[in-house]
Length: 200
Image (cartoon, rainbow, N blue to C red; front, side):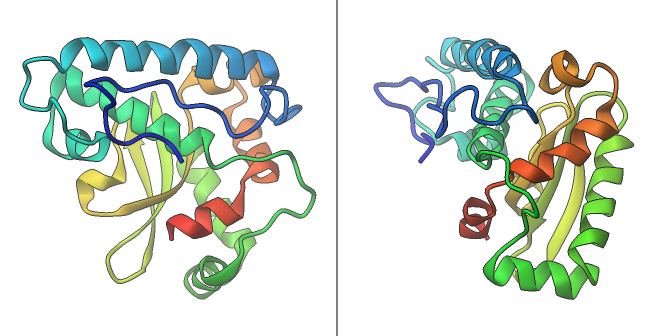
């Protein structure tokens, strides 16, 4: 479980639920080292530096994302986004598909998993600049695919985030250079659908 409340006023770098090389060749150990060990650690350090004496001190990560703006929002948003991102993966699996009620909802709303994947990848590939593509659910359980720029998260729209692909260049450049669509298409092999189903 990733940390959502500060401990002694501070947030910590999340521990990966797998070895740093477990997602290869989809995401290399080198990329995990930079992305988790350097980029995410920097957001954690920055947020911890901004919180003391602010109105957001003592709040959960989710509350900070919903209520804040500026530098606090950017760093808290990136921590929340990355925590959800890194905790939704597992070792590559052939013919990897959604499970349970989420699988039924995808089938109902998108007519097939393949159609859903195409729409999700297209939203990720066409997002201008840096950001995230998300699958989220509203309070009625209806699914939504959204593009979120920079550090934004579907929580700010009243949605429950379920699955996300990071389209910031640091997420894929070492492994795929500028081939963002190839990176997006490969990620389906490592999605831990049991984890995504729990969020649903």
